[in-house]
Image (cartoon, rainbow, N blue to C red; front, top):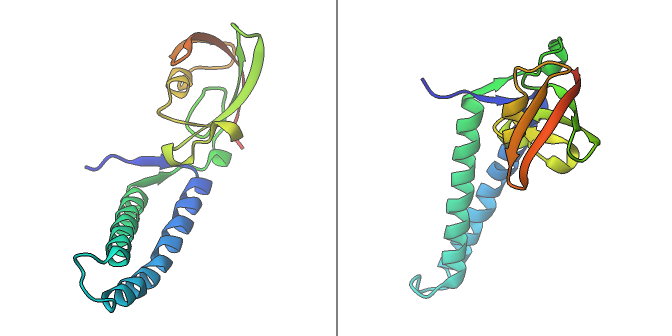
Length: 157
């Protein structure tokens, strides 16, 4: 059985929009290939090779997104509740080493954006937080060293 790909409804929508955009590229690329073919010798035709390469990249992206969507497990955090950290939760953590609070939502890999507070479910911090509750402490080995956090709040929105 293929591995499920967890994502929020927002993440699924974003992937569907990317897929639609990529599919709209197909006719444009086909036209570019057709025009480049008319320029003659294909061995030394840079426009033709560039268009074919772009076509290959777009088709690979389409296939990748279609695969992820076919295996998607869309989890709506607004339908969840509790104090235990799970996928989709907004988690407020207190960095005990730096004495600062941060708030993150645990999302699918394609949705992660640390600047916006979205961390991938496969990120070290998310993996350490999953299953823990408000008041629990976790120690996480990150690229910058080991950090210690305390879970301050867990909200499902």
